[in-house]
Image (cartoon, one colour):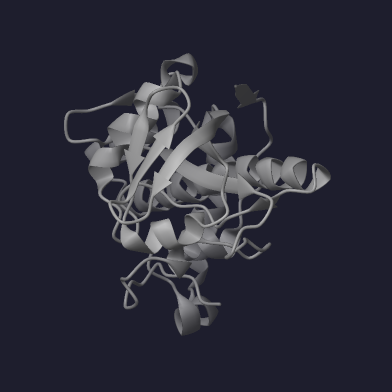
Length: 233
């Protein structure tokens, strides 16, 4: 088990604008007022981030491709969708991880909304989304780097609720790794608190059929091709 903290997050300005709805061709037409607010909220966000992450590798005991069930050596099991099962060919370990930026930023977003500061609230919320994605990406890059050093391959990452993988599997991740150590909890509807948190899984093995690459993104297995937040490849 590894706990990641005290990470200085890099916030991509274009990504923050994209999560405000300024995507694709609209990025070139952002007015000065929106740009000013966006940059101010990025700066504010740096004072509100409380980035933490936890990850742990778990050895696979058995994979049943027909049922979509992966049994782990620790006695737990995970149920995956067909598209994800296709990624697990040649996998011998799963690395489970959760990243969060804490609750300070989302509390500030709520405060700004209650004060009628809607453009600021929307921009800061977008900053939070980009920051937790950045932290999650950083954590996954460490997994890929360590695996490469051991001459192992990694799969694309996948998360409950993405693509056709049922979000209810979130509870299994929380049972397998002690997510409470980074202050993240799960509601009865499988939503994480703080809300700016992300969970993910990466497969590791020697002869993976579909391996990851440096441009890996969950959008690649998501079925919502018309989503305004979808990244292109």
